[in-house]
Length: 95
Image 1 (tube, rainbow, N blue to C red):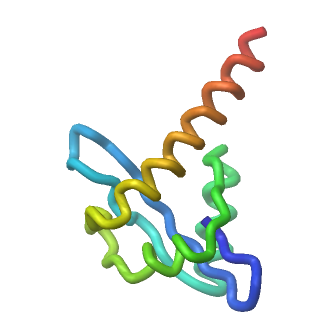
Image 2: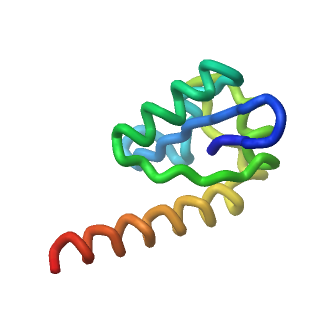
């Protein structure tokens, strides 16, 4: 989730129901580190959601920590959108 205005920031989250009850922050940084997070995500084919306000909130969470309950709804909306985009992409590939 990159921020384009001013200093670039990025946060990567992952959700694995077998490893926890909420998504966890797995990478966070600004400047060159943010660019590496974004580049790595693109190379891996990971969808990138741009939301500067959400990035600011997620960047405050220590690496490896689950997101707080206050962010569940917002992150769930992002993840639902990502899953939908991924499904549409898979369907296009299978045609």
